[in-house]
Image (cartoon, rainbow, N blue to C red; front, side, top):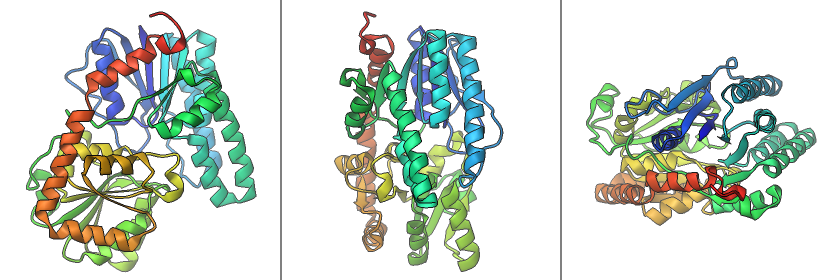
Length: 398
């Protein structure tokens, strides 16, 4: 079967899925936005078979989040290039996630034109996120624009041949918008066990940044509008005998950079995203791994960095609504502490508990890695995707 696996962000675990699908005899093109600044998977893999091709798509530099029209035009241009790819490779099935709504629309239309079945991989409910943020920025006008994106995404769900959601929390909405609960499958995201290996804190990366002998709270990944940089600021202000390290990019990182210049936060270290080959060493340099998701984002976003953290074997300090899947996963794995994102006092109290108890840190980290090894079985996960991609959920006989 000829497959196009499209992940706009180019994240690591989707790459692993494409590798496994190609090992099973499928001809796979894995496409992503090359100029997205978020964390990327390893595209230079020794285990990649000849039936796998990585296809970076370039559509101009990404616009600032506040430049709404520029972002929209860029996303439409991206969608056109993606549609051209469908016309060129003629896939049997396309699976696409993490994709701006209007780019996804152009991809779906190209699938219809070229006779390709379309699987909507719902990583987050994109239109709900857009509506939430535009409402904050633009008031009533933002609500009107958000309504358009909700209508467009709802139509895309209905036109999709199958829908994969990453949490049961999205299943009812997908069934309602898609018009048929039988075409909705729940396949939770996973971490890359083979790429993120627990390691020693004293390593080449921690020594390079003088972290090997200091207690370190570390945040890794995108720090966007659905994350609260204020919690990291509070950590850096409170823990003068530790280091708070942010390895990432986004508007939240920009906010921290400005605050650091103004407040002279000596204990806050800001670094750009590191190469995928360094990820294990980066995460091993932490004593505690930190993640956040805002309360109003909890309904439509699940931070996948938490799954990567579990693989690293370090305790997790997560500020998120407890109904969010990431929060439930950390608690289920007994891998760290979860506090409400508005509870600064509770967040700092949990941080002090982790700081003061190395035995607790070791136990929680080991629990997280054990959970990851049990749940992130890529062969089983690939079986689930093949069940969708080979036609069973399209009502066809494979």
